[in-house]
Image (cartoon, rainbow over all chains, first blue to last red; front, side, top):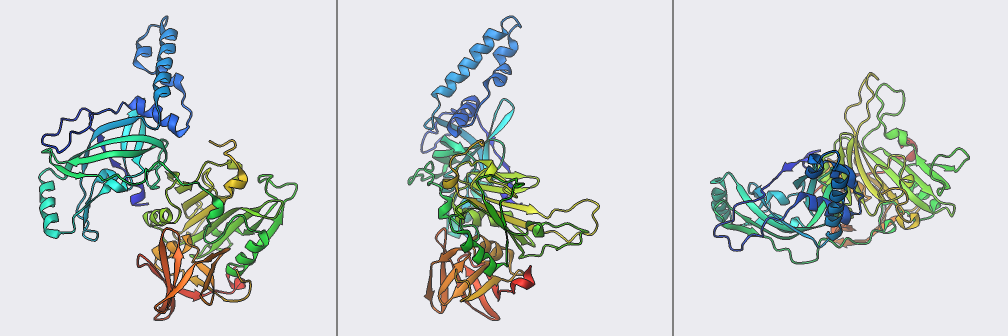
Length: 407
Length: 95
């Protein structure tokens, strides 16, 4: 859990001083936190509870108890009007107090810190933080400078102001979640940069992003059937999967659905390589997970077609940043990232009925990757040392249909 | 995947962590090789021979090279991460 959970707090420099001598005039600040939050809820399709927010607003708080109901109604109507006008084309602009990183000798470039993976723009509305990430940040990140002498001179100029710069950005809200899989949180606002220009404290332009090319807001259609997890696919006959598992990992058990089955009724049974073998239980008299161990459970439907696969592998060490980069390269931009104390989870695709995601599935998405540290029970005796499990789960979203009860 | 033909290979669990992660995510932590064909689970991977190595095409415009190493076979990913391979342990030994 290194760079993936790094939080680089940026300060929103509302009302920043106009930049003297800049090549282009920066856009005027237009980042109303309420407007951004309401746009985000609308564009991301998330429900917004107007009443409690309106109740905390200044007009309602300052109203007499006699007037409060009327003021409250007006405030809710006003907020609805703001949200009604919001679209995914609504633009925001702001000057951000930012910095330029140290020189990257391996790649011959500097980076604009705001646009590095793991960075975000915090915006506060109603004492709640909205973390704005940019889906096309990579296009604005690098300041290539392969010439070392030029880079040295540039670096010295940066040091005059302790590497502090101002980045003027214009963006629009396109959804939720960090496609780079690095910023987690309750409300991660996915935005697309429309322009980005970084200037030093003297107003001299240091870099202007070239944002031409495909817009960031065009995610490819997700189809689990076109993917695999560790080589295993949904949509194949269960006998085919069973043969592959047996050849590679050992003989799985096959359990047909019984009367007491507690998994989703659309599944007719499952194959399993004991999931308990990947749990580390110090002091137990059972198998101790070893690096390289594989655990697996795959559900099939009444036509004996595999519809859900969960595979887990034990690792001695895990660098979350390595996993994040490899996973994004493998599966493309993520829909969500969760980074709680219990582990790290990436999700891809549209939301899915959670009833289909069980036994280790950690998010309501058809493709998930999760990293968990070893489970150790307090007072259970000796520890087997740190171990990690990387789990991959794939659910056939085309077969499953819509999101069901999960949103 | 061939149920009997070909050889089953797996990544050495002592290989560098980055190579193990790349292998796992691409289904190359355990696979069947039959001639120039590579089967990863229920997926057949695209391959081509190149300078004595078998180049495996991976998702995300990436590749891995299956090649001879000092002490056997190794898998080398495009970014340089390298992992030794070992013959698959008998299923009975493993579980």
